[in-house]
Length: 385
Ligand code: GUN
Ligand code: ZN
Image (cartoon, rainbow, N blue to C red; front, side, top):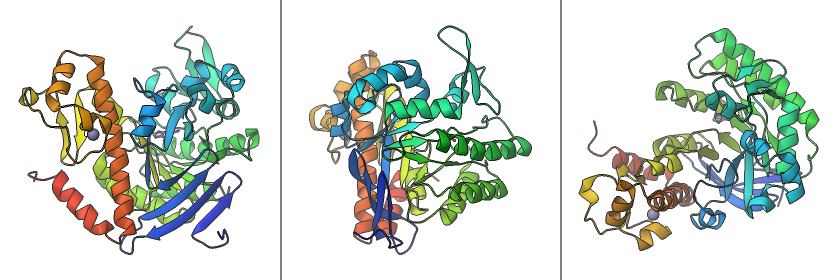
């Protein structure tokens, strides 16, 4: 394999080989070789915050087709903590997950979950939900925890702006601080040979700030890049042009990761724009509300229309839930709040996301991605204006 060609990139802990590009969009299929697993992109990464996918065993997540899952630095750093994780030999060993892992750096989760999280130049200051004491997650501490976790890909600590913020100056400060924190993360990383550190492009919906962020972060020549700050439910008219702008400038021979995005139509649009990796809590969160993902949106199994529907959620789905159980059975479980219902739906929803990405990859390889996208949107929005 040649790493000199523009369609391949080799780093100490990552190889990215583009195997096929779509001729009508920026979509591409690539082989991503990571220390613990080799996978194809575009890919979706289910979120397993604390070393489990709520209610699922790691082997069930692998059976549903996941090649790489997300762990969270903030949660894992608190429980079991970096000493226990180190002693266990890292998160792969701790949770018996043999495939690839990516850890988010923690700041985003604190800003979105904790009421009193505050950002200073030092790091993210927060009140411990366990004992109320004041704690600071610095870039150095985030990397120390992520080094103990040992994930294939680590994310830099970034300055994430609150979703309600509208002030341009605050976005500018966050963009510049994110670069300064990247440099502190790079300096703190002790596992440069075995863990990849991805920068996160920030800048909200401001094109000039995204440009500033792209210029600064790309000077750091990293093995892959993430696009952050877009999972707050902003309008699609603002969200997609920012993705388009970022993927136009990001190095084409490196993986591009759009953080916190997992709604099926967004996945299809973003892969068309050249995004390779995604994560989102959506498939497992919506399962907890009794919903199953299908090609024309989602169906709520709590609805009485499924009370005696003895078909599978989706006949075309290859997951263990669809092979074995009926909509009627899952309806009965979810209406009585039996956790088994949520468990069966989570398996299906993760498998749905993975199969969607696999269908996208197959269509690119056959030279039929734009046809796939057209058929997908017709089906998804069928009957809607
Ligand atoms: N998850 C979703 N969006 C973001 C982001 O902007 N930064 C980080 N660190 N995680 C995210
Ligand atoms: Zn299924």
